[in-house]
Image 1 (cartoon, protein in one colour):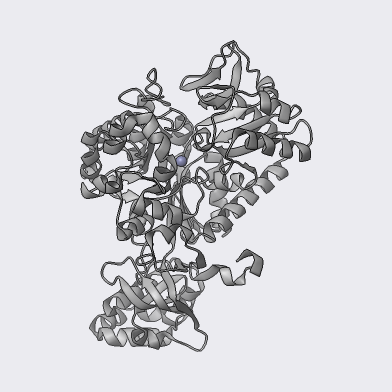
Image 2 (spheres, rainbow, N blue to C red; image 1 turned 90 degrees about the horizontal axis):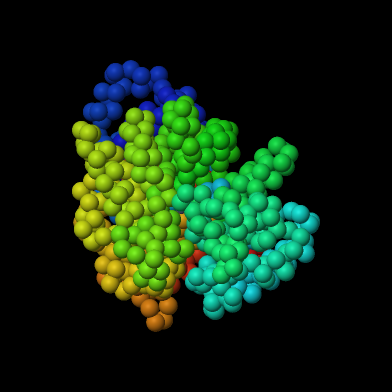
Length: 613
Ligand SMILES: [Zn+2]
């Protein structure tokens, strides 16, 4: 630890030149003239490490010390410690209580964990949609509806309280999770009749849980000018009944036919109303993250306009969690605007934009994943390629030119193969091809021969544990047992073949809560009767890595976060159980006791009113 403390001391002193936080200011006032001289530097080099530790500790007592319970650092050089000392937004020391005793000053706050509790690094959501999460908290949430009739009833209730003519928007429905197949239906999807009866005077737009499909009612289709003659845009599909009438189901790019009208109407709101809405989305998403122990959020695709606004918010210190952003926009606009917007660690390490996002296929649930062989349950289809391969190749060139990561959504085995081919070709020109840390988002279904290519090319498999268990039932329907066994959610095979696998929830596709996703990663248990190919499960340690240090690595942030190591950001979560020893089937029920972000307590369950605890 002494060495770690020494390095921390030096790193904190170095930061006095660039950082404005209070701790650095304190160092700056008292020490800068000394360390700016070569003789002081020599002094640091010759004094004993112990003296540095003691002098440092006594001069700069910790603001907080977390001790007791179990502390899991995720730092292989010192995985378990008794205490963590925090000051100036950083971890300044870890070790035994005795070793940290010199850091206790008159104003140090001691956070004593109970024997059951565990502290670990703040968790990192590896693939979510930050503004989408905030927006989802402001709309009808349909993830828990169990039947088509229940969904219709929720829309009817919303219609009662929404002024006629205004949009009713919702998200999260999934036909494969309903108890019964709706009647009548087309390919298992309901026709719009009941929805029209529930909301005859409102346009309704309900996005599928996957985000790759939408349902609209007749009013919305009339507003959008959609009828039996409408042809879908490339990469999209409109479902029709036997008479040729659109049933209100829009796949992939065809969703835009309706959503652009809804967005147009939203844009007619005053600038002030729009601003209020996005500010509220940022705030709600932040609260949702922090109460679940998420201190950093890797956002899988936001427009340039929204990024400009978020960047300003970061500079003004108004972001509630740390954001690592991928830009998703028109490729020409990215080419012209990204260089000026690209940012690393802006606003005290709250905003980084250094990645480009595209989607080469759709999702498996709505038969949009692009497959090498046809769907088992839809033999006429191999899914959808949603963006021309040339566009992905151009994005790869831009990513290299701008020194950005390239992140491609690929779910089907064909989408993954084509993406790996593009990566391999583009990276071949690089002096160190594996150092770019390009990512495949989801990497859900892989041809067995493509699995080792992730490790060989240094491509991150940015996966979501919870997708495995929540999709398991229809994965087998879509792919058949053999393809599911050999190619779906291949975490174990990927890790064993040298790939870095990260974790997340794709919020708002799934709930942002990381603990059910961790449990799914460790158990792959769907229900009493089904465990989805358990041989592909990860160990608890591996699963925790996928939510901490490996996720940090996937964003070039492993020197900043992902472990409780002196010098790193003081982002820490305290949970109500020991995640290494509690029964595996209870990991998903884990409650966050406290979330610390940059050394500040930003969520504390003990401060909630009794009825919310
Ligand atoms: Zn996503």
